[in-house]
Amino acid sequence: MAAARLRTGLRRNSLLPLFETCHLPDRLFFSSSVHAAAVTVGGTMSPDPHFMVEYLVNSCGFSPSEAAKFSKPLARLRSTENPDAVVNFMRSQGFDGAGIRKVISRNPSHLCVNVEKNLAPKFQFLRDLGLSESDIADAILKNDFILRLDVHRSLIPKLEMWESLLGSRELVLKHLKKTRWFFSSSVEKTLHPNLKFLRDECGIPEERVSVVLRSHPQLISRKPESLRALVARADELGMPRQSRMFVRTLDALFMVSKERFEAKVELMRSFGWSESEFSSVVRKVPTFLCISLDMMRRKMEFFINVVGYTPSFIASQPTILLYSLQKRVIPRFHVTEMLKSKGLWTGQCKFLWILIMSDTKFMEKFVLPHKENVPELLDIMRVAGACKRNDTFHLASEDEKGLN
Image (tube, rainbow, N blue to C red; front, side):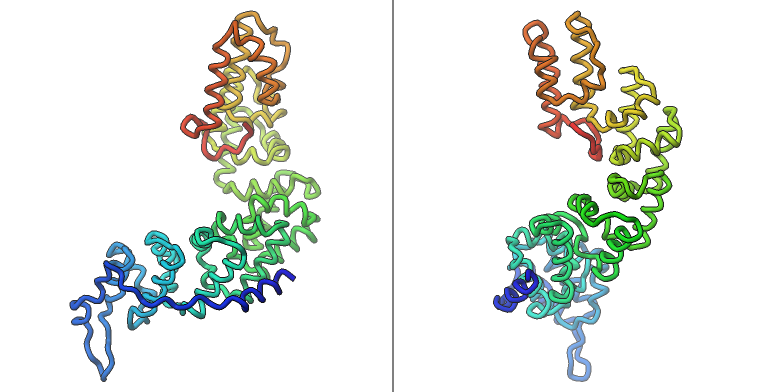
């Protein structure tokens, strides 16, 4: 039904008219030097082989070395008429110079396509989805191969597939604008085989896969053999395929290369963890793998050297490694230590439970009752709050995927 409406909309909306070639201020490629470089052979014009280099420099703003590189796939062009039409069309659709250069640099042959037959239908397709001009620019800059796909044979099937997987068109459009190569994978050769493998061979319901895909659709966009390799790695960790954490483990392994994975194994071994403890932690909290090596080291050192936890205890309570060191762990530890030093807290409540508390409950129990006698507590929490609100104060690693 959705496909029929979309096809009807595409037929109903006429293609964008061709825009007359406009003369850009910096179009020096029509200079007399270029025309003088052309020679007549058998009554036809044979252009200077470097004319597209000059075009890319003067019309698109590439450096000479970049232009020389990107002009090679354009050797069959005999005039700038088609590149002119493409560049002018892209400008009319809201692309600035940097955006046009990015599209050309990824695939210079875009300059050879027919605007009316090839480009305009793709833009109309994206408009029919409800994307604005700026949204369309974002989507194409992330997924420029859309410009090479056929609307009815490729784009519509991909749209329908992802809409059924993610559950809403809004999520499809969100990833189309934000996720690189979102529409690149073949439905027949990649998406369907991967889903069938996870469902039939791994016993994972499609709805469970969909939950993870809503945030990381790239998981099933991999080549089937790559997905099978991920499953094998999860099997090696002892993660049961029937577990609800299995797909999340695949997702975490997808984001961590084998080299980084082994580096993390070695790091935790240096702190005294066994391989079985490491595997157990990954099975409990797969996102543990997404913590950077530096942040993982800092957290372990703090919990061992400052809080006084043993490595084995940390392995048994791995969720504490997901909490932000700067925004949660250190501020709460300082607050409780200050209260103990002033005799205002007995320390009977374990620090583990203090970490689990919500921000509101922690404030109500440990900060607000003592704000008059120990005003420094509010200062500690203000700094922690600033870390949450302002990246300038966020001292944790960028790829730390823990909780606040």
